[in-house]
Image (cartoon, rainbow, N blue to C red; front, side, top):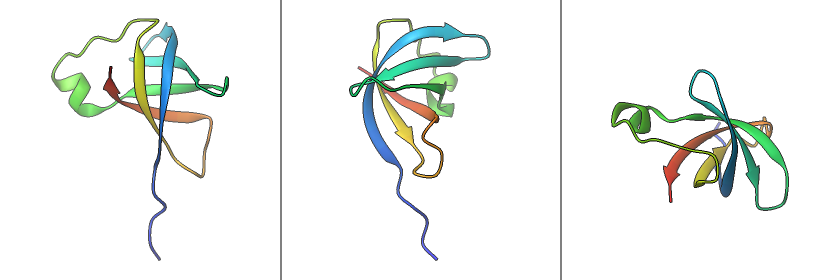
Length: 71
């Protein structure tokens, strides 16, 4: 069985939470909880509220995502 592909969407960071987690708002208005990917954490890429980011979401759980790129 093949794995499902991740859904890549654009979002805006609304709130910074503890433990490198963020509340982000998608373009359609939906809010979800997102964490920073390992490469972004490794290279100390800072994310602040108001930043535009790319988020990967699993098709199985649409309430959580992973921030992969900061624009």
